[in-house]
Length: 130
Image (tube, rainbow, N blue to C red; front, side):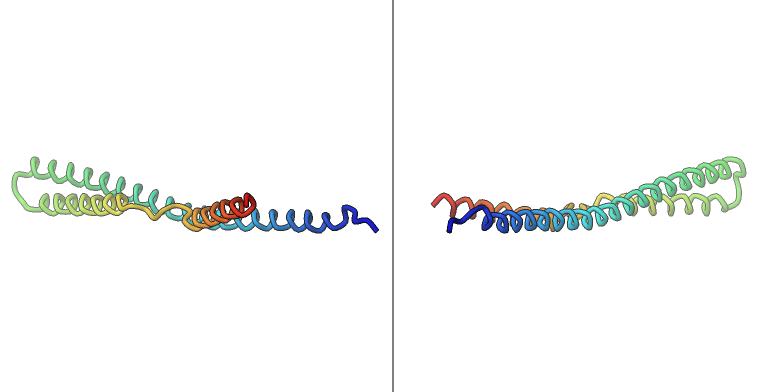
């Protein structure tokens, strides 16, 4: 009664299943975090477009206000136009300040899991060297 390669097969198969499960779990986590990062990027792009539109409207209203102010010489409607331009500049400044806020770190769960895996591997290597 000699032992052949039969006992090694289940271990090898178990190791492959564990590796596949490990990789699929990491890929799923990476996929979820990529979706979250995509949403944050979309919000930033929308705010950039909003700030650019506000600055464009402010410029148009300011030009209209200045033209009206120069052309008419009397009346107060240009102050309203300049006030609207100032309001749009204020909105653009708020949007830019929101964009400048630091973003949350990208892929925090994947990084944490990879650090855990690294520590586990280092610990396993230390044990195997003994």
